[in-house]
Length: 63
Image (cartoon, rainbow, N blue to C red; front, side, top):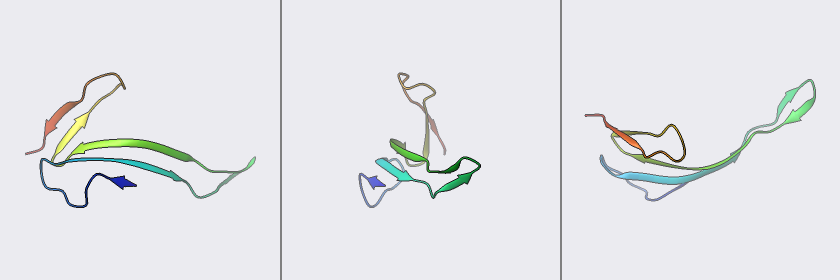
């Protein structure tokens, strides 16, 4: 995980990237792993909602 800063306060925006791979998972067909790679954005103390990639974020203030 990579973040845009090391310290945050309410109202700051966290942005970052996350990338990883799960532990091996066994099933009747053998073993597999889940890989993920993406970006995230969040305002501390607020909830940002976006249901579809091309929509704008709707921000809910949690005060």
